[in-house]
Image 1 (cartoon, rainbow, N blue to C red):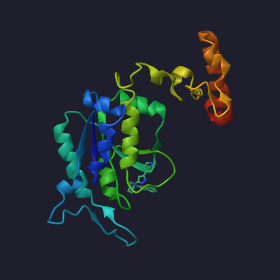
Image 2 (cartoon, rainbow, N blue to C red):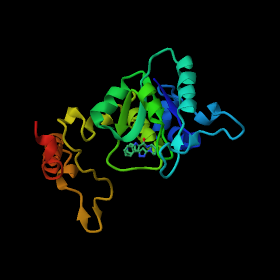
Image 3 (cartoon, protein in one colour):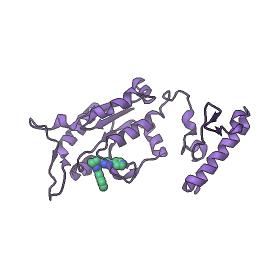
Image 4 (tube, rainbow, N blue to C red):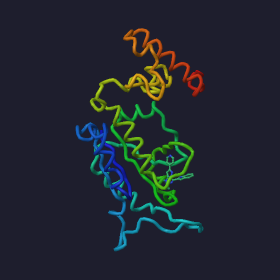
Length: 229
Ligand code: 9WO
């Protein structure tokens, strides 16, 4: 699977591929990350990628042409018709089901906006879908792109140490769309709080029943919307 990212700040992506469990996805080749800087396709000595908005107003707008050339450069390298995705607060919200779909896909071309936004004509001509992480505004689309890549990377085979530890993730339908249960590790008592006794019992059926009950109670209390269907 190949993800291309179009960003003015490719250096922001280094930690994603060099630390933690995601690193395995990139080192194994299961996930290929290609970074393209639209500045490389900008004309003139100044390599300008932004300009003032028509109609006036604060800030700058990313020009369509360097972005379009970046997409065409990537399209020439990939044989597929990978979708072009823009991260913006007006997009479809990301959730676990959508991450799983991406994890089984050929990848995508991810556009990270900066400044006040992108020239709308580029969006109309090139962008296939917009993805939102929530109702807030950031300084750029890089962090949302990394969020998607992180969520996808950990689902790829061989990335998590324990082969199927993501089967128990919150929101995974394998646990009926319930929230994950609480976790405990040593010591058995910390600041006067003991680990629930059942977890020390070694009785696997009772432990599983307790965990399932915790998942149901937590979901009912914190996310009752997940139980309605
Ligand atoms: C920002 C914006 C705000 C209101 C309505 C539409 C909007 N589109 C954009 C946009 O495309 N902004 C670009 C990317 C340029 C400025 C920084 N960008 C950005 C993306 N800020 N916040 C996001 C984002 C992306 C996904 N989920 C939450 C926020």
